[in-house]
View 1 (spheres, helix red, strand yellow):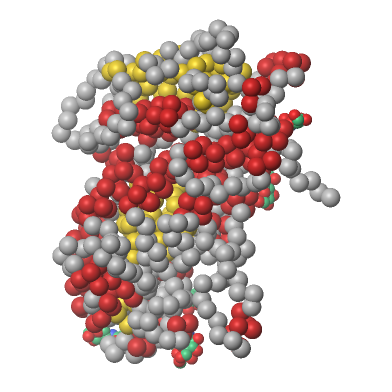
View 2 (cartoon, rainbow, N blue to C red):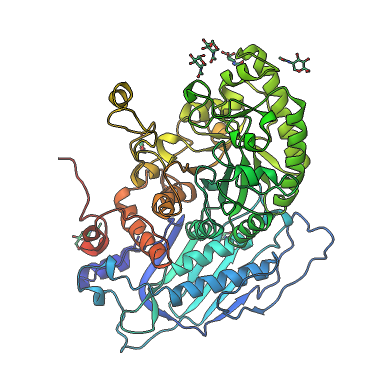
Length: 606
Ligand SMILES: *[C@@H]1O[C@H](CO)[C@@H](O)[C@H](O)[C@H]1NC(C)=O
Ligand SMILES: *[C@@H]1O[C@H](CO)[C@@H](O)[C@H](O)[C@H]1NC(C)=O
Ligand SMILES: *[C@@H]1O[C@H](CO)[C@@H](O)[C@H](O)[C@H]1NC(C)=O
Ligand SMILES: *[C@@H]1O[C@H](CO)[C@@H](O)[C@H](O)[C@H]1NC(C)=O
Ligand SMILES: *[C@@H]1O[C@H](CO)[C@@H](O)[C@H](O)[C@H]1NC(C)=O
Ligand SMILES: *[C@@H]1O[C@H](CO)[C@@H](O)[C@H](O)[C@H]1NC(C)=O
Ligand SMILES: *[C@@H]1O[C@H](CO)[C@@H](O)[C@H](O)[C@H]1NC(C)=O
């Protein structure tokens, strides 16, 4: 929003102001309309002032007063270990590297041939941004690097004065990184030469997230994705201030996760020897996320959705690839753990003892799965031979208790899908975070029971929906009854629909407090590395803003799609120049028309 005085000036002079294209929208800001240029030799400092001691002491190390640290802008700097200064330096390096090397000349956001109206005149006096002072007001705690929801203060304030002094203040390194992402979004490259400018000086931004858990779920079992695919996704998440990557690592389709103490799991369960993740791969992905404020955690779905284990350990699994699949599970191939079998316990002891200590340095969470268990599976289990919930419920309770206690023993907090408490009445500790997907009623019931939740309501946040069937249909009855071959959760979730979702709708304030945030879900039946980017982006950005800025603005009004669209268009273009094959959300004419202020392609009630 222009301050009233500046808005008046703009009106009188007939100057068209560029859209303040920050994504996600900051909680509050003011901006001006003066140009400032950015140069490679900008002076950057980190913690010129004493750093305050934090309330949660870092064990075994004395408080250090960090003073006047110059951070040279270093191309492609990678930190060697998670020290706040190194993480911040890497963030500075990425931010400036992005401004100087992406070449983001925003011709596609302006009317044909009118870019010059928005760019500064290179022959007029140039004002330069001379200094960026970064102040982190507390030491990062060990938990800052692998936080539970709410353990990190992600807030930041960013100001740029008209005379060229920038200040970024944050409580944690993550807040600094968020502020640096916002900083990059203020700058454009000039079309007439190697000059970079912001048209918005002076700027003042105060910003913090509404929800602490803002994630993307990626299924790496139905299709496999390379380490680079995951890193690229983490990069784009960080630009959008998304902070959790939930890797749905295994399922009945394939087991890509290499477990060194049981190498047969991936050797026989992966789609191919190349389509695996070694312990080094997992560490690399988690570290990459940690450096960018994105916490990466894994899910090993169980006791259903685990058929691929039968490739190496058939004695542990029932109903593997049982047909017709729909009597035994939601989609082929079926396969579930035997629920009353000591060999399964032994297997889980080994699996968790191997995996969890390796992921625990980088995350506070492990997801234990628990969706879509079909009672019929245990009819095929020679140790049970029943599908009666009165028989199965106590076995499942014991199974889940065992799984959660293994996770806790590794120092991690369990997550579970909603069916475990809601369909199976399994009682669980209040530390367990429940992931909902079946809609608002589940959120209401679970928060009413006092459970913390993250929401992935499939009516809004399933990015795979609405793209048609992947099963095949023989001529005749099947063809006729499934024509025209829609999938189960269509139509496609547009960015507008994704943006409109608030998981706290209809909750009491006490219930709403238990909503930690949400995740968009990328189930990968028909998604592979070729299409991954365009499925996720920029639709995950829409959820990112709903989770960071809130569905409503500070006055309580719903955020406007007309206001959001041009900012999302700009964010999409910024992602594209950085190598993300993000989908277009509108035709190019709408991105360019009327300086992209949103109204040119606004649909009104007819
Ligand atoms: C940002 O500024 C506001 C208003 O002055 C202040 O209350 C808040 O503590 C500041 N946040 C940070 C991270 O410095
Ligand atoms: C269990 O199997 C029977 C057939 O034996 C089938 O009629 C029923 O629908 C199945 N139940 C579920 C939940 O799939
Ligand atoms: C579970 O296994 C135990 C030990 O083998 C057995 O005594 C019990 O009957 C089994 N429970 C069910 C429901 O089959
Ligand atoms: C249990 O199996 C019987 C016999 O196949 C079937 O009729 C019933 O629908 C099944 N119950 C469930 C919960 O699937
Ligand atoms: C769970 O509890 C509900 C309500 O008491 C009941 O209707 C349902 O059958 C129970 N489910 C299981 C699997 O025990
Ligand atoms: C916000 O939008 C939702 C639909 O997404 C609607 O139900 C609600 O009434 C709107 N709230 C306000 C304050 O306009
Ligand atoms: C958008 O641009 C058009 C043409 O420049 C102008 O008439 C309209 O008032 C602008 N709308 C807003 C909300 O700025």
